[in-house]
Length: 448
Image (tube, rainbow, N blue to C red; front, side, top):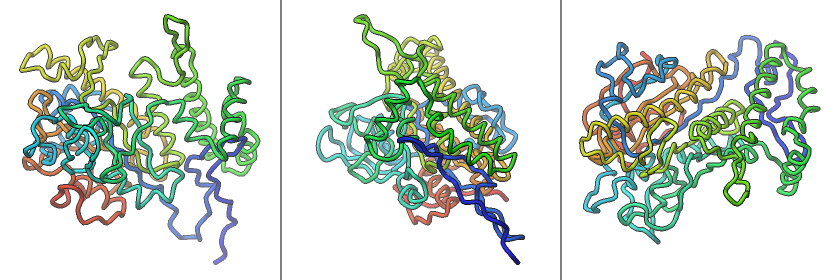
């Protein structure tokens, strides 16, 4: 049987020092033979980290199974409730002291994606393990422009001591390329935008940025001709999808360059554009950039620290003036616990924004969220107890339909969190025997 006429696969719109990646456009892909299955959207994985534990009574659903009610902390996830799975009982044995004394915050972050007990040092000789995101990036990264993205909402040092003799490298990173090399993270939305959509030689990218700044132009102005050419060759539905995608990209660009987020200090010196003072604005810019990165297949693997472990950031936007870490040492004080729950819910509101964004993007036979696996949680249970069991963890997305969602699953006490990651790698076709302190796969996740 003869093949249908093919349309050349397009992945980028190009201009001076610019490459705007394209979303999933069915009519821009090579068409299969009649009767052959259509190409499926790729799977994506993201690992989102929160510091200082959680107020678990407000986090944990009472009922198990599909009939659970969202507890106060998780209520912002109501619109995507059917697409999340709350996982209770998971633990990180590697986070406990094991003779190393204090430093639970540093161990919380260092073990979150590695499952490996870090070497206690505040200088040379840092050592943890290869994180699950980098295991996935090693196998899948060659299929995308960026093997992985590492994001954050708080800057942090990689040197010096941050927690009881543990290096800041442990507290400020969750992604590790090798046991001795943390991946670092990008916290500036403007720099991330330029990294994602710059192309060519360094001097071309610099010229592109300078031209846009000088002429007050959008990055999309540099790829208009290429966009018009592609649009003429697309089916009507895909042309509309392209227009919506580019409009959304322009909205992100405007928010990054918003004068309202470019403040001045007492000497009248402009602070760098791109990092909003408001936490929610910052988090939602990062969420949109990560969503676009997944949508346009710039990467399929990402990690994102909502704040560094041990962060003492205050959240005045929700009327919490005290530092987060200070509050986490609540010693049973009900007022402090209520404020911790308030911060937890605020972070979940940012998660909800990200998940709803993914779920708003049609892709294949569902949405981008349906073809994703997003872990959200931390490496401490209660911040005051510094316990590394009964962790706050949930999984969003169905992995292309492989997993049954919309449930609260309770596992036996001290079940390794790394077992969840092994199961996720399986869904993505990555065969790994063990990961950190894993003991096997997490049962009962698959769709029956």
